[in-house]
Image (cartoon, rainbow, N blue to C red; front, side):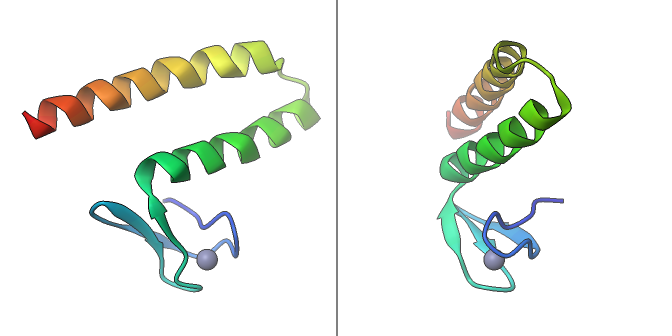
Length: 74
Ligand SMILES: [Zn+2]
């Protein structure tokens, strides 16, 4: 379940935006992924996982997502 980076509320996907049901924050899916990535990075640096490793994993994930979107829009 996606969480709002602002208030932690439930976020629903309403194309092409992610919309927070609690505070109404809306953003494009891509921005949301970017924001949640930053939050994860902060968390991981606290638990000690190297940023390089995290970045590599996230890049792979993002590429997979990008490929999926491209396929969908064909
Ligand atoms: Zn919110």
